[in-house]
Length: 226
Image (cartoon, rainbow, N blue to C red):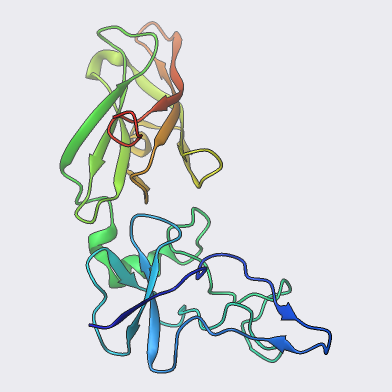
């Protein structure tokens, strides 16, 4: 398979304008090729020949959401007010609006099948009733996080979970008000220097509410100091 590295596929590219006012509109891939995106980061991308399968670690865009241009012509129907292709965004962007369509074509990217437990992050204050954030791995290398807690810990009345990639990188967030949602897996499309901030509020048998939390704790095995 012939693969062409796409530099700046998922970066904002300014139009190149010379003194003559000529604007260059750059296509993402060459004719007869289509872009694919990296399943574990927000910048990796390659072009593959039409009809060929992406290499390991890459996936196709959902049908109808395939980007074509970096800075499209004025008459391109999916040109945004910022002069970008509407679909020129990585499905690993936390704000990607068509993730359900990605899963329809790539069910292996969902966290529901994650079974490999990588680590646990204990929440403070620690004790025999303290909950934790469990970090699992799915089949394509995505980190999947959820809350786990002892049965006697109490009833969940609220929770928040935030994951950062490095300094200034993407952010993944989730929140809820019940135990069922706290046990759902948050998919994090990165394996690079992740930090977790988490809090969960539990009502005990005495009706008292206890809060357990951590702030900016590094996920083991994802940073250079592993």
